[in-house]
Structure formats: C-alpha cells, structure tokens
Image (cartoon, rainbow, N blue to C red; front, top):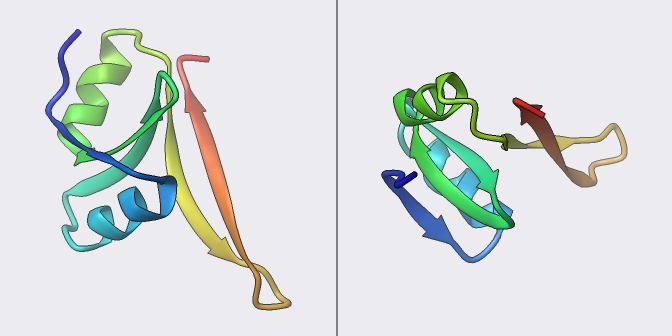
Length: 73
C-alpha cells in the first residue's frame, strides 16, 4: 500500500513536522517514521495496516519520553 507522507530521519523529526500542522500526525510504520495527515492515518487504520502513532511527553523530572500508540496490532 502506498502512503502519502514525509519520511523522517527519526521520531522526533516526525513529531516536530506534525506539530507544525494541526491536521498532521507522526507515525511509525514498518520501522520507518513519517509525518502524515490524520486523514491518511485513518485510511491506514481502516485498511487494517499495523502502525503506531508517535508522541512525546515531558516527565515530571523534565525528561522527554517518546510514546507509541499501536494501531491494528
């Protein structure tokens, strides 16, 4: 399946690109990281494709942590 997305060097780059557009999100798919539109992620989900949303949280001690949310796992 072909997807419409920007392939990124790492998860943090994908998250940063997604933050610049409220209609975008960061995902990981087949070992690669992408910034894509939420509508594209929904299309992947409905097609049964296994991927994960990427997000970043800041812990109470100030450290940043990468969080993944599996879809169709």
